[in-house]
Length: 385
Image (cartoon, rainbow, N blue to C red; front, side, top):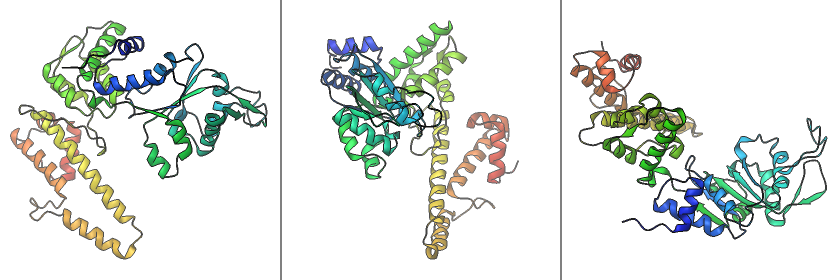
């Protein structure tokens, strides 16, 4: 049984159109509402696309500065050469192109709140300027020697592990502790349970209303697949997939197969989608096999490259030889001498071709790859026509 959500949290969700009731999301909203009236710096953490941008708005709208300016700045989108000017302003003639004086965001938002998204992307020199603002409320415009003051609340967000960035010298330790007086962690989508279905329905309804198309619905099997998928792109990725389905399958009930066909095969071993196949889902199982093969192949190639790049020249050739020896099969199939990953892929393709009496078009459809890709793989793996 779900815990009852406080009335105040429900009002916040309604005002900002936040969808979801998962405990981790509710806890994050509670922290934002609790800290909002207290003028402390806040650091919002979470993976890209998880919805971090909602939390500075909660803090601003439910705090004492709600009637003042709120400015959101994407630090990763501003070139390093102009970031200081954007944040703190500049004087006329301070650099090429500075034809007039300009106020920066910290001056514009005086009395209000500034949201620094992707704060880990700030250069170290800009980090030093930001630390001064947080500690004293003072800053210098680019090209000026006159100290100016600002009364501002800073909320920062990042998808980077800042503790690791500090250890690597990419982020100032003193700035990290200044920003992280209060930390709010936004959960990734795959940890939000049934929120995934609620969001999918909302995105589908929004698309149908905006573009005047027939709405889509979802079968129970499709819902289960959505719940099991890892969603490496989080809410942003879910919306992208639902928009595609709402466009091309308007008016349909989306099946598991239609959902899986819309999902990308991700070759990144760090974010490989994790879907648990059901007993009757052979196409899902095949898709998972290919994802695993691609990921394992990439990992082995990366390992081989690191060994080749190793400075220990004396041991390099023997080490690479040992790796290749480990990869070589004891009993290669026919004349083929590839690694175990190639053998597994070769076996899968050969068995599929056999089931379809050599019909490549039907085999490609079962494997969920294009006919051109099948021909290329057959050539690469030495599979005869």
